[in-house]
Length: 403
Ligand code: FAD
Image (cartoon, rainbow, N blue to C red; front, side, top):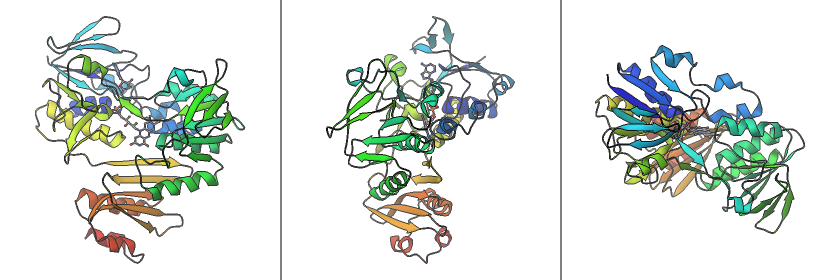
């Protein structure tokens, strides 16, 4: 009987395994996960779960019984130590050997940690990637505590929003000129800077962390502008690195992630990859997307191709972030934009930012404006670009642009 082994029991691994069964694959499926929990959704970790508004069980993508019911062997707490592509087997951390016919790599990514030389290894310094991280930091989220958030990307800003809502004193440092610089336009940055300011978060842009200090446990921080802070803990959100070590050690080609062709296949035709760990060519660039929609869509496409569908993966990028009572929804990819149009929505506080390169609509950031998001997404998915002047005109009925 054919055996598919999936390494990484996260969003992509769970989707891929379930899709294989959904498509009628009747061989063996083994889903190997290093963590002790069944596959779960990560987005709430820096949002509702950290805020204490969501139970752990609700994080799980499926009840644990689902895997047994689908005849998927889910092995938790089971880290893969090596892949042996010549002989088609993987070895587990305890030395066990597991043969495969086809292998899928859905190993996700790891947070970048601060080096020990600047205090990154002190107790009370946290990253936000998995359940253990969040369970460990949650007790610190009590009113009056002083937290330093390092990094003004979505993870850092979401953690700052939770901390501010819980009554903590929050300082957020961002080394770049502005928060969200890597992922969004200046207008979106300004929107979130103002939102956090209104909730009392002290955002310091163009300011790096020089070092954290403390006797065993972090208690202070020195910043690049020479200032010093007394803190109770720190949350570090300075980006992630795709988990490529296993693949690299097995001789699989890497290019900012595990390199796959349009089908999701690595340079070894029996080995596939999907989700955060995988990179692929898209419109002349090598892309690696860090989002739930990409993890699901790519994993499902790879499952089809493992069964011979021969169907290229075409990403339809979208993303979201929740901060306070603001839901930001993002459609498209904004790289290479040269113009942004800001548009007020019909409802109080609704605002959207439309990214163009010349006359081509690339992406939309919509804050509390589901209509702008929906219209923008449908336009981008259909490859349509309305005249920017229409977006700029307040009396344009957005829905009319879809006709
Ligand atoms: P993961 O879900 O990370 O799963 C990979 C799994 O592989 C992990 O469980 C890991 O332990 C396991 N693994 C790795 N190596 C091995 C090994 N050698 N052996 C066995 N197992 C291994 N995306 C959005 O779209 N919207 C959001 O709002 C959003 N918010 C986020 C908030 C947080 C705090 C985080 C951390 C992420 C957020 N994301 C969000 C990103 C999203 O969660 C990821 O893009 C998605 O989880 C990627 O899925 P994946 O399966 O590729 O990786």
